[in-house]
Image 1: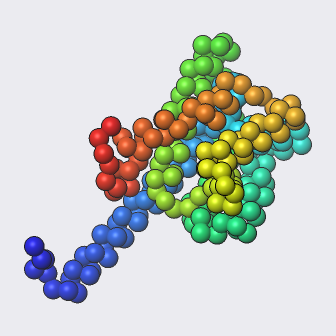
Image 2 (image 1 turned 135 degrees about the vertical axis):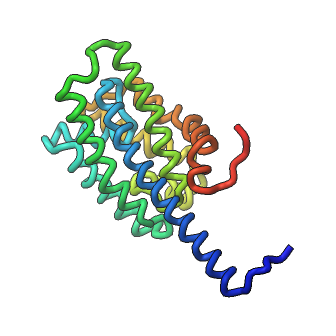
Length: 225
């Protein structure tokens, strides 16, 4: 059934719809990156290890005596050089938002939680915080990825590597994460349960939040869980 609206009005209506959808995706991307920062902080204060890339950044910041926030931005700058040279199609506003907000947001909440002693010094408390971190980080990753507003400098590495070699993305991601873990360990960083969960167990949580929340927020069609 054809619309009874004149062509100019249909075009204007479509333009407004696309604009609203773009604004929704932008808002989802911003919120997702904010949640990523909180998730990073929760993993850090759990003292059970962080995601591979963040483990390396934290180890470097401790070694060099530089704040986590600054070191995160510096490391992303090096990752971005590769993305700019070999994967410019993955660069969008979300790339820069992730680059310049996740580290500082994580650093801020780390300081707030640690200075106010909001986490008890016991294994059950640390485990509970880590579990919260898994959920928050999984939701943040899901929202940021579902918005399709650019890939972060670090995340782009495994995508680019997969495109330039014969290995699947999964193995390229394992390689980049393993390299970060090995480097963090060499620098005396904390490698623990949280690192393993982030590296190998985050996928199901991200997929779950994709269907339950993120795609709906972005205006995408989803199948039932």
